[in-house]
Image 1 (cartoon, rainbow, N blue to C red):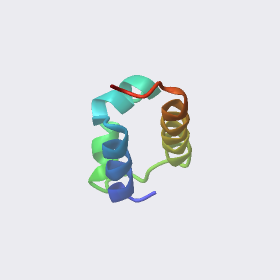
Image 2: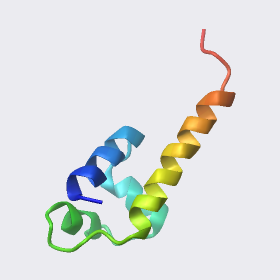
Image 3: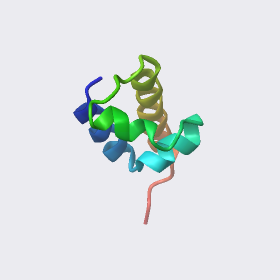
Image 4: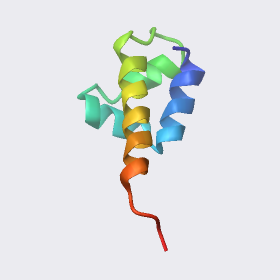
Length: 67
């Protein structure tokens, strides 16, 4: 996962970096290091984010229509 893909996926989820940190018990400075390219993004991160996107997709299937 590239830094751009990481940022884009957070955006798709409507998450800030602080939200990601809270949900993954990650140090608050870690995502900034990834986005700036100072450290590489670990392999578990794209899997975690893919799971979150899939959960969001599935949840939308069972939510009642608005209106």
